[in-house]
Image 1 (cartoon, rainbow, N blue to C red):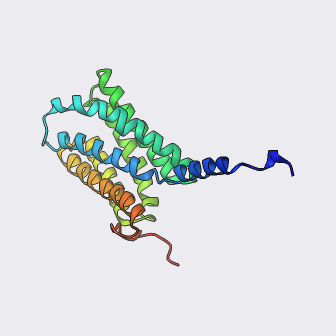
Image 2: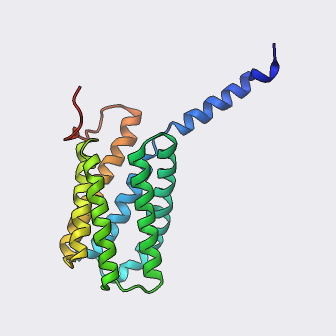
Image 3: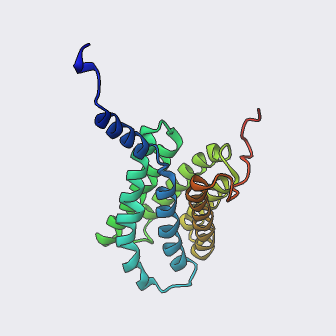
Length: 199
């Protein structure tokens, strides 16, 4: 028997442990990172926090909203989840873009910034369509998100802030459901996907 093609019991255990670790659902990390970063910024837009609170948003946007979502997107890619990979990686990049823009002294009232928000709103609308095939809370997350971005792009900051808080709430709910349901399935409801193909 060729020893090179047979793993020891210890090696088999190591491979099994690695496979188990990589089988963990990264969506919860991405959803929570998105939810609370969005909620903090939206609290400013909605008028619940002063503009000076942006100093707390920037590091959060870089590390939790940005880096954590990029990590989640990378693991979604490994799992073969095209939607999760595209969404988490893109919104991770968005938060890094926002943080760098503000740190470089960018003007959030400039036409360039408004145009960027408009394009991100269009992207979010496109992502909302497949989200409707997943579940209700993810659908509502993207619905609120693209409405928030469109409102912000056209200067309706307070309304955009409220929609952003809605997006944060539904994203947090979905992330919480992923975590809890991984321990005890079907504990936290997320609702059916509106466009989900019925069996």
